[in-house]
Length: 298
Image (cartoon, rainbow, N blue to C red; front, side, top):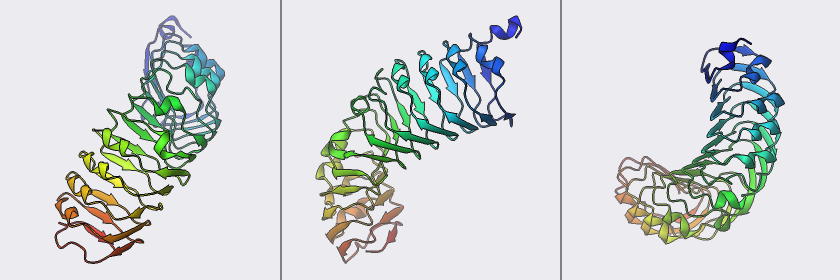
């Protein structure tokens, strides 16, 4: 490795159609602050020597064919702001050293084969804005550090086997725009606290064991574009307060035990494009004015 490469601070091979393993010399470039290898065909495992790159702010390895365990030495990269490992074939547990990231804002390891639970202090720095762990085989409950992480903007946890009382597992997030929690194991009732996430545009809690009624307070979440509560065990009437959600374009409530009439206030949702109500105990009539929304049975 020549003197020029030893001082390299930025290396970007984004979408370069590269194949094979990473040359071991790369893990000796201790001056690197950004390493971007995403959207290629790199394969093989990530060696422990990745821990040498202690100046990294950005490590982007997603959309490749990497496999093996995520080495615990990644946790030595304490300056990381972005860590993107999604869309590979990593397996095993999330290293406990992931609790070392004081400055981390973007953590993405979805679409792998990871198992086990989240490290308790995975949001120890309190700076996470994007947390993506969807489509793995993760289990256990939501750690308290994530529940209390006020900086969260986008959260993707769907497609795992996570569990817990949904009314207690999540807090109030002032900046939250989107959260997806589909996955069959969450239980409890929908908390009125979601209405305090004033920037929330997407709330997806489909395919779980949620019970109780839709809280009337959800009508105060006026930025909602997508509300997906399908395939749960919700009861009662669909609250007329949902008619206040005038930004809504997808309202998915099928596969529950709702009863009564569809409130006429739903007709105020002029931007509604998809409205699924199938497999409930709703009675007719359907409101006359539902714009151009696609209605899927009652």
